[in-house]
Length: 185
Image (cartoon, rainbow, N blue to C red; front, side, top):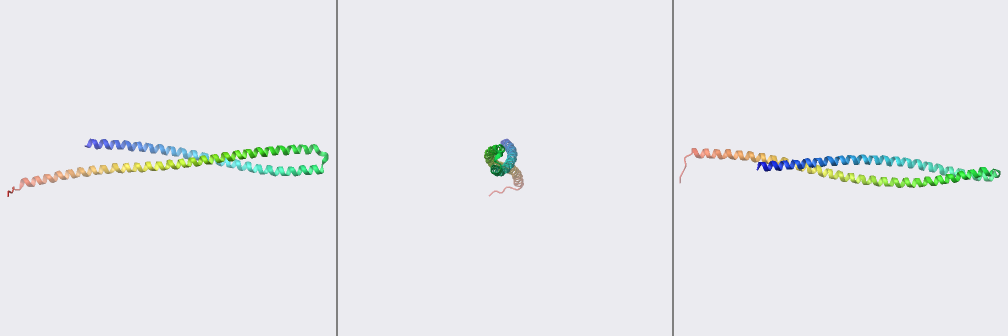
């Protein structure tokens, strides 16, 4: 009977060790996912800063385009004899329009990439929450198993003490019966 209980206790200790190892693996995974999420957040922040700079540059280019358009009109009105210079200014204006269009395309691409990174960060946050919940469940199960193991050892100790007291009590009864004369009715 003691061997069976010892075996049961050993098997539960092995289960407890397996659960503790699983908890350690889950914590390690949680830590790695947390650091990955931090890296993604930093990358997202960098992309946001780059996007801000591109928008600022885009606004500057837009203002510059407006200034150049005004200059081109002014040059056409005032200086018809300088058509060569006006032609170069128009050429610059076209180049700026193409640059502006390219920057807008990059801006759209960067916005799409930012949205994808935000969605990925949300997915990682959800996974992190799920892993945390799973880890909490493992911790609760670990605590439950420990409590169960602890109760069993107390019960075994109480039973042993009760058996010892019963043996002593039976021994005293037998001594008292052997000393007293037997009564026959």
